[in-house]
Image (cartoon, rainbow, N blue to C red):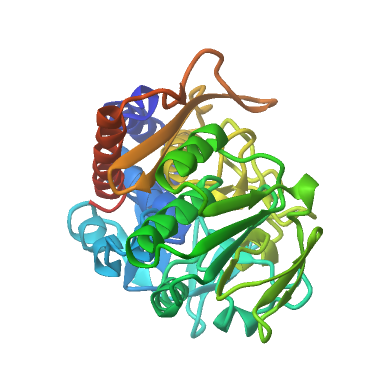
Length: 423
């Protein structure tokens, strides 16, 4: 994105360095920016803060030693990627960019005293804070589904043990069995994700267990890239996938993990493997800090991603209410750069630049069949909206060669965005 390029960030940093508040410079104290969460949003923000101003004292707090990306985790379920291939290191952030990476779990934020508490009791003070906590599963939203039920009926919407559990269940499923996926209502992390997941599990079943069926129960009446996905299902997996929209009874009303069944509006269905994706909310630390509203998501100033509820705190990624922008790794990456530039400007007592934002989302239907959607957004004081006549989706009548090329672009996008965030 041109407006968030390294060159422009560095230029912004030079301006900021010359206009930082005189009392702070006189004391010789570098402004302290703490970033909570090392995913697509947090890691990128920490890196770009240091690119913008090497004098900033930037600390990234992350619970895990490595980060495993949700993007491409569906490929693990399809059987053609390993978890190790999705694992990112924080080494370059520290050694190459000068970010202080603190391994630990942020357990609380004292917004009045401007301090973050780490498990064990350590506290870090900040001048600006970025919160990028991802999402939590709302286990109380549907009767019968809780953390214990997820041990038998996985959500696999946080990559890790749940992903591997669902993969083992698919491997153990008999040929001729039924896989049920239950997709939530909006908003939730990665809107095209459930439909890519269905596609790649269908690819696995077609090649290993071709008598099997897939039932997709959806709380929504339509979904991202719907026409492209459904056309691909007809051509690649004829007769295997049945999608039930919310208006047709696809809303799940109860989960019975012991009986391996779900009750939806049209009736009760038993599955050999069930993947129930529950409704979600902003990560708990954001909710506990008062950053979220009654819906469980964090309202922000669209010009800077500063919280509208707490001063000098910025919320990026899946946790933020970002208008028309979807909750995706690509969105989080773009928002991180915007927030980094806005913080540099705020420390220099400057207004942030007028931002533009980009999201691109690739999905695979098979390992050699890719589709995508791209949108450019305008941020205004009134909200974030799509830019007219910008972006678009893959052509409906693309050739097999073009679909294969998009699959290659998918791999290239992943290499590029992970290098941008963690490299």
